[in-house]
Length: 388
Ligand SMILES: Cc1ncc(COP(=O)(O)O)c(C=O)c1O
Image 1 (cartoon, rainbow, N blue to C red):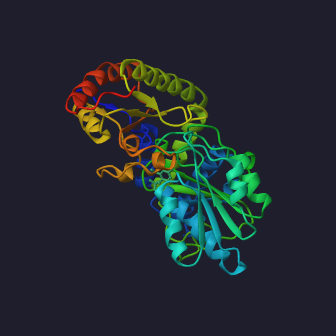
Image 2 (image 1 turned 60 degrees about the vertical axis):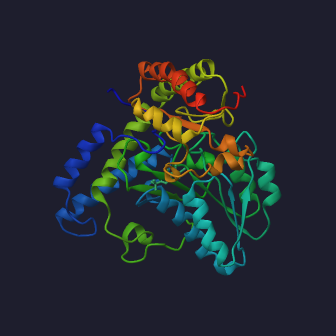
Image 3 (image 1 turned 135 degrees about the horizontal axis):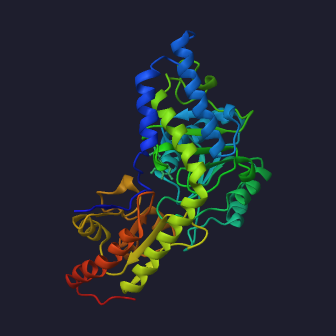
């Protein structure tokens, strides 16, 4: 059976050129980048080269890029590193959006039990955070605001430049989790006007277990991993040289192909979305359709349990998701759709289709062809009429 992968927001396949540079680095660059001898200096050189290409992907200076173990660590570092560096200033308030990834939401929770006040900004049906809501939530004791650039479940893009301006006008720092936007849409840290930005290699055809955080020059964070003086004293631990090299290659490819791939994938996503809405009654797109990352659509199927549809599609060779990968396998309603104010049935009947590099029109047409039959069959097992 020819399988179709439509779950690129969970992770992407490693690009062959990335695998090649990683294999070469594993074989040849085994030195420890902290060592002063030839082998160490070679490893340091390839890490620094990757730092430059990763920096170029986000319009940053290489000296401001710190490599981490992925998006989760970058988010943790941004929030805990800032909070702990500023704990004594009396500014003990943190703000995030209610639709952040668990890497942000679950990092706020332990801080709340330590006396930090945390506020989650609401989003309406659009899934977009309003600068006015942020303005109203900000107080003089707010240390940090964290709002994601693009949402992993519905793909909506937040007005980060405006939100960051509002936050910084009240003296708060601004972090954005750009894990789902990096490599898909242009990012320039200066234009966004943020202080901290998190990215992860495996979302743009790089390897898993490596990411980066951009820290605006001059900003002090307490390290969350303590030990040696790696990464300019910001993140201890011998660097994952091959992973970092792979991330560098992935960043280079993403930057070079972004404009073409954006147009190609957006056309495929729109074809899929319109095809499904036309072919399957009782379907609706969740969240604002613009601005959105080009590869994502999240669709609600009335009178369908999303997990059953996911399994039926998988049996037909089509891989999709019911929302964030971290909660798949459980019947937890999506916290994103819940925050958007949808009733329980709608938070449990939605499927995320996230397209990527290998997808073709033929893939999209096959999904549109098989979906109506699968949905009809699943609906025939329940009695309530379809609410179109
Ligand atoms: C928006 C967002 N932030 C953070 C993460 C976590 O990144 P990683 O898997 O590299 O830890 C993800 C991954 O699903 C994500 O989608």
